[in-house]
Image 1 (cartoon, rainbow, N blue to C red):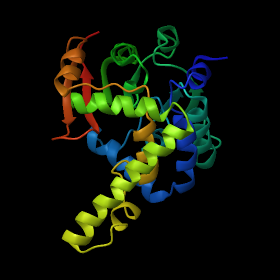
Image 2 (cartoon, rainbow, N blue to C red):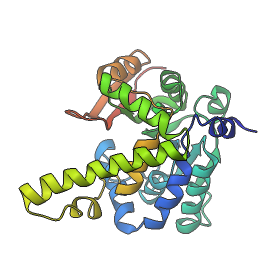
Image 3 (spheres, helix red, strand yellow):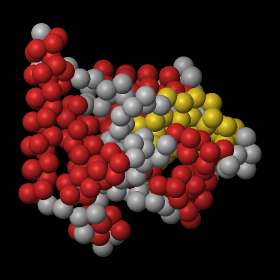
Length: 278
């Protein structure tokens, strides 16, 4: 039994790939375009033509697909979760069935020998992944193995909200303990969302409380329901303040070139670094 299966059996890990498999049923051209736009905006490029791109923790495979459509010379996708790898391979089958430019395999960012065997890439990308490894700072250290001088590193890490983040850690751990806990947490959370919709949308904005959710479009192409399930169940779970991420990677020879941080809330802070020294 592999490490992933052991963690699932012990109820220490959320089945991210199973959630992404359901997301693929909703994937359309508008979501793919949104994912492309998100890459272009943060990397400040119009295309990835001639570049190599590694997707660390590829999840659904959507970002890898976006990189391919933006013209990347080679895309290497890997994930610790075999169900996520299957999702990425399914998108490759749908959109680039005969291409040798896109490889999707199973692997862990915590496996240094595996990473050293991959070489370096022009774009090292890991959105919302490293804080789910159970060893976030080690994962951040290891991801630098894939970046050579001049490489760009694009990572997104959950924002540290102190006591609130600690409370969410307990919620997420409980969510993965069994169907009873999962059902209770889901019922409470979705009831709260509906109540908020009634109070804000009906009484204040005079609009349908369902519109907020049925018309939801993530800037990265994700779907509302899959985002919520991912948030509630996403465990292991760690967080970091923006300054901590900046200082940690600065000490490894990276220079911050772009940052998109949250004014408040429990989402992801985004960072793009360029490696100046080994």
